[in-house]
Length: 144
Image 1: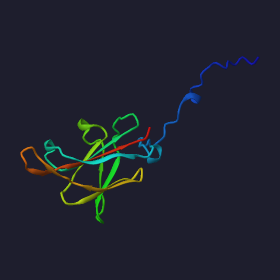
Image 2: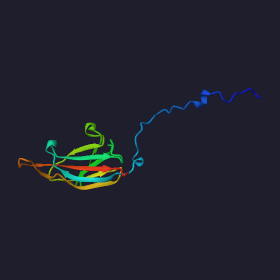
Image 3: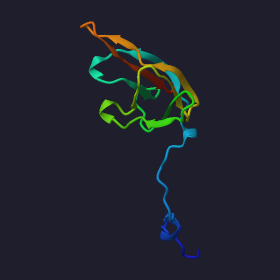
Image 4: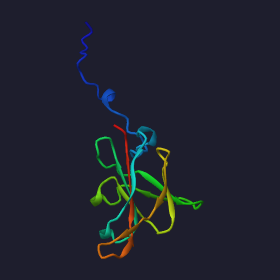
């Protein structure tokens, strides 16, 4: 025998090297399954007080997913970008965009290549008989 014990912990071997520049964990789009369009429909909700294009992104279990990049555009105009999860009190997967009546919008989810077109603010009728501009609601989800 040479008297050495194999059970001794060598501190040099168990240490993990600390990398100089730790990068923050950003979920890469390739990790996420693509979204599919669940529902895209006009809604009449006088309590909103403004015309919104509302997007709700959920996973297969119905949990909201924050941080989804959404691109909205009108015709040939450059797309504007907004994200889900900026209003967590309305849901982690919730996003909204102020829409103007009379315009036709197109929404794209770049990570999934999903495009939802022909989004228009509907004309709604209040109980008083007054008409007002409604909103549009889009549900996207990861298939189970």
